[in-house]
Length: 117
Image 1: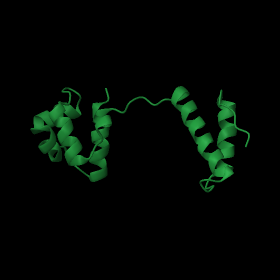
Image 2: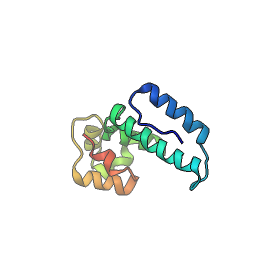
Image 3: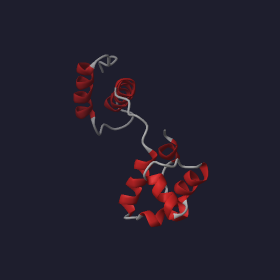
């Protein structure tokens, strides 16, 4: 096992190539341990250098609507009147905490997606 920190994109590509070879290694073996350590190093590097911006709450709602084939009218129990649903989906009104709770409970949209700014 020859593991070193990931400092740049070249190191990252080398780590990915090694991960491909180790994929599926049994836990508790030398290869399994190496796989686990490399995964942590890759995650750390990607978090520092390729972080993703927080998701957009409206896009999260639209994504769930698409998944479940929902219409804006289907959102009324969670957001309010059709006018309010329209304002939220068109970004003219922010989600309230009660809307966020109802969307989470009813449509199972994660809080972290709904609370992102």
